[in-house]
Image 1 (tube, helix red, strand yellow):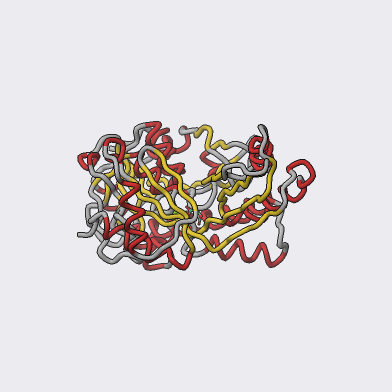
Image 2: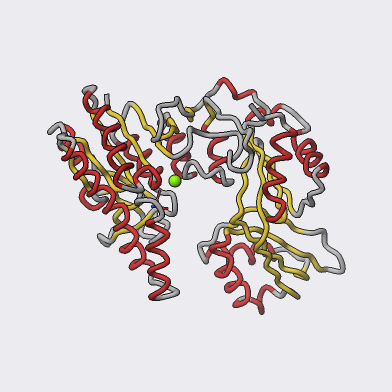
Length: 402
Ligand code: ASP
Ligand code: MG
């Protein structure tokens, strides 16, 4: 059997944790299984590197930024090879370059295109544990790229798919996927299973356990994932196509504090205005999430939308640069907002989920600023101060507690 195991930053944060991971991998290896290990940078290493970069240059060139960030993962895999050597097991650490993990050319947000598997297969045949850097790739210029924050999960799933692994385990510092963040809702319950679609929404909307693109890729290639803790041997959560809990009305509540709302007031109420606005934003490579357009009055209308707070300044910049052609009266930016979402495959066939969510928020005295929905999700934008109370009240309202 071939197993891909991915360990996040907290799981390799120090010497003791590194040996803990090494031992877990060796245990698997001693069962006679092939083991490919994908690692993140140690602890908060990536954040530290970003701070260092910004201290030198507030607006670092993206290529140089990726050149820097890949050292975090390179450090982890090298130390892991050393730890496994201490445990007397043959292991080899490889960067994305050595494997050859090909990505698109966009620095800081590249997508994996193709993974060469010869080197890894060769090392596995030599009965070595193969330790691969997460989060990074190589583009057509032979430069390092990175896959976006949290991207190591995607590396693991891509490797599992490319190697046709029998198992893909994502080890983290929590026991699995919960109905809500247990730090906000202590009564949150661990899910035994969740479908790809639900997990994708939860991941995108701030559940924090998996990189959303890893879930997208797992679904596409049918890689069954297990999310579990590196600190104990509890079962974890299985992410797969069809689940027993599929008929559950709501599987979880997610919160995303990194949203920023941008509003353009007094746009002209005529065809093409929304197109022009979002075309400008898209060309700046900025993802837009919720969108709200007011009903026109006096040939004017307002459009509000949310973006990730990291891209808010860039969005505002392109809007202001295009002030002449967009012709708005005013633009405003609100950073202290949070997105709260309920996700559940059962919503498709059950009316009233949105109403129930709004009732919970009303009972908690929380004002809703924007709303958006999909087949299996309802999302609202609230003030960031209300975020935790909103999650708790919705979690209670849907009876998700243990
Ligand atoms: N080290 C990278 C980050 O912090 C990638 C990862 O951990 O998945 O975003
Ligand atoms: Mg992560």
